Amino acid sequence: MKKADLRDLDLSELEDFALALGLQRYRGRQLFHWVYGKSVDSLDMMTDLSRESRELLSEKAYISRLREIRRQCSSDGTEKFLFELEDGHRVESVLIPEEDRLTLCISTQVGCGMGCTFCLTGKSGLARNLKSSEIVNQVLLVQKALPERRVVTNIVIMGMGEPLSNYNNVTKAIEILKHPLGPAIGARRITLSTAGLVPGIKKLGESNLNINLAISLNASTDDQRNQIMPVNRKYPLKKLIEACREFPLRKGRMLSFEYVLLEGVNDSPEDARRVSTLLKGIPCKINLIPFNEFPGAPYKRPSEKSVLGFQEILTNNNFSVFIRKPRGRDILAACGQLREE
Ligand code: SAH
Ligand code: SF4
Image (tube, rainbow, N blue to C red; front, side, top):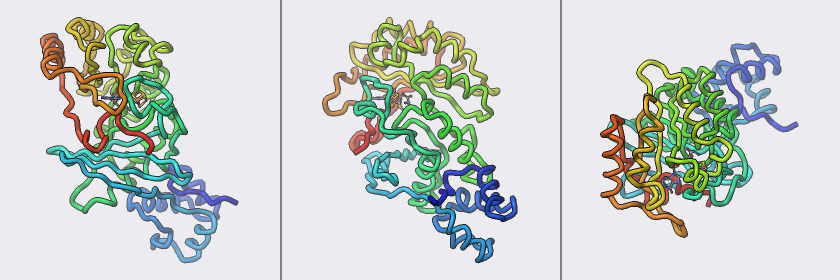
């Protein structure tokens, strides 16, 4: 029989697992704390279990890890980790230090099937979904690679892949990351970014995860969006914006909209005005991302002047608008530059 990966089980599954082994239910809770809270890699380290229990466990279970293949540092302090999965596929995670926080950008799929024309991750299509263990392990292993005083404070689910097309594994991983007995990362410190899968947005709104939601808008008309984001043909702007308006927000919380600026494609003053109209009345902030170029990319990054002009129109319409500083471009770690190497 294949051994079970404890790191692919959530709390109730670990409790069931303990029971199935003839142990008491509360042992499942202990396992959860060892596997996710203390982040041990070996069953031998679970010192509050008897030796017999540990032996029994090691016959039936193991704790998966990812193999760190490479760790690159950008001149701006950003670090990119390349991990190998059990089946040889590879994914990347990016650590972004800022003044008051340490943010980790994690991946949810090997590649991506959404086919956005401006994104390197999407170029080679989708290989497969990540398991919950593979998503959580990115956080655990990066944290382990850091000195004790450097603690990952925020998670952005904006790496490789479309998180809402791997809904079950992604939400399972989020539950684990949030859990007080696990990494205990607060819901307010977790942000999921989606290309706009409307049913997934609705489901997320109905869940009690309460994490932050970011939407990659990237265009101001359906024609434009159809060209650069094929997902728009299935879920056009009207449906997408409607789902955003209906998304339940806790007091004081906002949605985020991301807008990749592509020179001559979606960066005109008219575009900025149409975006203002689309988003009017939605409690939100807007992140402008000047296009990050990659070899062979069919687009250009707009001039700083046109980026600032775009921002100004939105600001004048009372939106909070941030221009995302490119981080880690020299090591291809910036938005849309991750891929399976
Ligand atoms: N699939 C999800 C999350 C990963 S992409 C999504 O699309 O939202 C994360 C962000 O990077 C998205 O906002 C996307 O629009 C942006 N992005 C993709 N390629 C980019 C590029 N070449 N330059 C700048 N931003 C890019
Ligand atoms: Fe996938 Fe997001 Fe890239 Fe689009 S932008 S191809 S959804 S990772």
